[in-house]
Length: 101
Length: 488
Image (cartoon, rainbow over all chains, first blue to last red; front, side):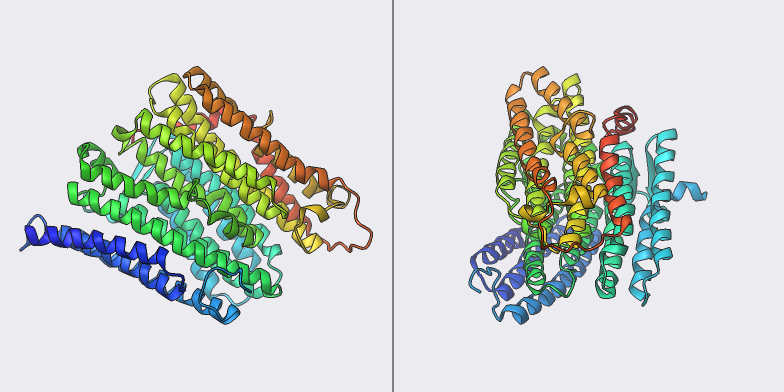
């Protein structure tokens, strides 16, 4: 029981670490990675609740949720990278603030 | 199951099939676009007719019942949202055919737009918190991609669109992940995802309040409520006009719809005068902030986008006023909020389509250089006038009914301070709409050559603005529809 709790707390902690990085860094690649870290935190949390009731017979529904979440995050990341590439190609800078032209 | 029972499924599947077809098609096929749009409208209308006749309806996807299966649920509120989407959607589809002059943009626009339509319908019908997450993500991804669809000619505009899209993507990912974390917390507590089952077992506890907080923040980010609105104006103003119309008219409404659905259903135990006040204060700040910045804009699209921030604020006044729902004033505020949402959708999408016409005609949308519209584009001019009435909320428009009910509810329930905000906001709206109106009467500047605007684009803008006015005349059936089967 205690290990799954630890995973749950770790998941939420990872989520907030990702959120912090997303706001703290200007580099777009770092921002995209930060979003992925946030997602991983949520997924870790969801996986940990699957084992909560009975560690030998985990609940399959959270697994299905995580799989769906991963698919969504992968596609969002791919799209984010494509946008990043376009921004870098157009401005030569990997940043969002376009004041310095 | 007979075919008519499956209108719900058709309303999601038809636009999805359409999107897939448009990915494969090389040439633009106007008839296919019109057919798919009409079929989606038809399936929505069929579903609306069924709900009107027999009350709210369930559909168990694949025949699996909850808790394992996913349930689709249609009641009066979801039907109104879907009808609104279908009417705006049909106009957008037809408008885009003319607006995107180069084949390449249209090729990207069409599949994304029909994906977005399908995910909106799926979102309005979802009866399951995880399924809502999936539809939210589909909606956000197609919306972000649509922002970045722009014509190739104008490099600086294309660049702004890519920047706005990137910002929009990151912010909406934060929103989605917050929402998902909330869902996970709820699942950890109760082991169900179905809204109806959840509302039976949910009880106040620290983890439930944490879940409500995450879900609410996630949805507020996506609705762009002040102070989480900063991403909206650049995204909505830099997108192509039909996309702006969809984003301002429909997409921000979807997450607001979810907030209403959840807070007045599953989370209703958490709805108190304090939480209502929280939403109300943010809404009121949004009204003042958005209107103030709308006054200072130099281009029409930016002005309309800031006006959206303000108009979103009005919808949130629903929470403090309707917090004690059984009362007469609460019910009236609920009507006002939903009515405002719908009439704003028509008025705002019409305004954005007008801005598209202006861009096509003048090659820009700076407010100080649009003289001559009244004389040369009378249809666009009328559309600007009528939808402006709706945004300000002057009598005979749908916006008037909504604001009048808001005012009555706030004074009736003794919360007069919201009435002050509503009136101030309306006055400011009158000023920023007047800024546009005052310029369109100006004579055409001498050296400007106007481009022709296809009649159909002007007629579609006028069509939507006429609906927003028409809503001021037929409130009764709409409000009756809203109250069909609302039990969570």
